[in-house]
Length: 597
Ligand code: ADP
Image (cartoon, rainbow, N blue to C red; front, side, top):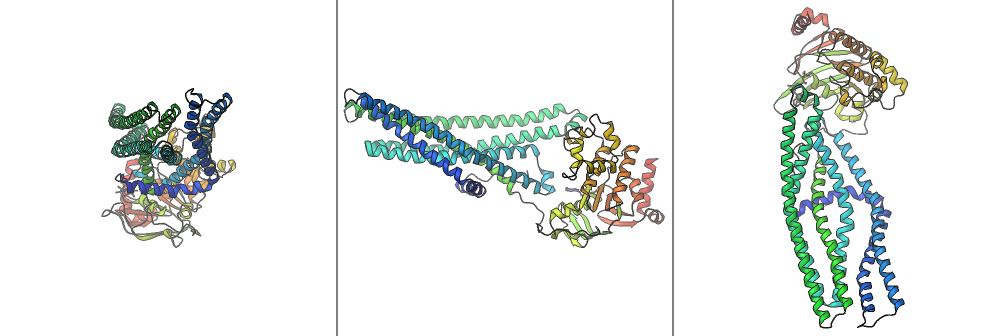
């Protein structure tokens, strides 16, 4: 991913992250406030049940104790039932709370996942050229899971546990004096500060693991996507070795992570054991010298158990939350990636009348100081077919990318029917242009759905017309399942010429006033080429067409040929005029003719 770095782990960065998270989540929580409110009530009911348990136990023990005031059997049985009810309500309300709130968590994950997907699609082409699909998918997945975790545990674990600790300390203070409350407060403080420090120290290892995980996933996905290239060069072993190396790094990171976890867990266990022993010791002494009953001893013990269980869990939750925050941070890194195109007014649509295209004094560079186009001027009249020719790297594809507004020119302007395309909505500009790319990549779906992609609302009949217009009929006849055949990942089960005709069929369905045709560089067999050219001619006849031409056949048909060299027009005119002029075009023509012979 492009230049995305983790921020230093500091309280401020955690705070900032939580604030950003809150900004995104508060609308979702707000929409579901009834559910959230009910879940809170369940939480209170569950906690109330829990806090009753030690008192009921104490009453029971004292009631059964023959040395103290023994209770009647009915009273004892009543206490037993109350004890059972308290236990049940604790578990039941806990479950109910999770069930109620689960829906809110799912909605939040849904919304953030969708936001990220939309956002990644809104980013410009540079981001996608630099993107690493495997790692990105992992980051998004981990980030949304992190949000779900944070939601569930921050709201329903950390805050309630702190509340519970305070309640227990107060109850002990009232019933047994300051020293018991003091032990609780001190041990909770020790436990908290140790966990906090140790977890901060561990965060580096958690991040290391995540980075290594994304890296190895990126490697695996990239390698599988390039399946064919791997085969062409017999590089399976090389690929496996690279994957192995990244897995090695992952393994090392996991090891460090595990060891640091051991240190954290060990420290926490020590603090818990020490304070529990101390409290029990104190209670045992008090019972022994008669200042406490057996029931009191049980109560203290029960409170300790009840308190340190969520506290131990709190340590786990805090650890996981730090991990979740690191994941969310990565996800937000993706969400905060800003598109580099200047924003266009979304509500102002381009109106196309004739489809006239004008490149006016356009200057453009992919990287500063390395201009690809300099003061480029070219006008294509509405309905005209213009072929761009010139050596590879001359800037032909760049022109089509500027027209489609993948990039903005650094100087000058690109206009459609007199409107600078930067000043109307991106959507309306792209709606006006149908692109037949050089290498058409298809979705791994049926041929029918791939064609329909040109206009998802198209009827079967319209799809059939597009197939006819794109000369795809014979291809479909040959396929075992016809239109329903699945085309394979990226459409690789079809030939290059067939894929390009699928693109033409899509362009027919899109029915945009401007057509950009990036001719395939690799030579198609003559049958395929004829089919592609017939389809293209039929389509171009009704549109303003810009052709990036590599072969003579397209050039001859064009209304006008523009020869480009080093990002500037060196010659233009009709085929015969240019041949007569005997300039650069005539030379290119002779070279290609020779190659053909
Ligand atoms: P043509 O289509 O005439 O072969 P292009 O317009 O594709 O030429 O490329 C013009 C120049 O811009 C080439 O030198 C190419 O290397 C460079 N270029 C193309 N795309 C990018 C990119 N995304 N980032 C940096 N340089 C690029």
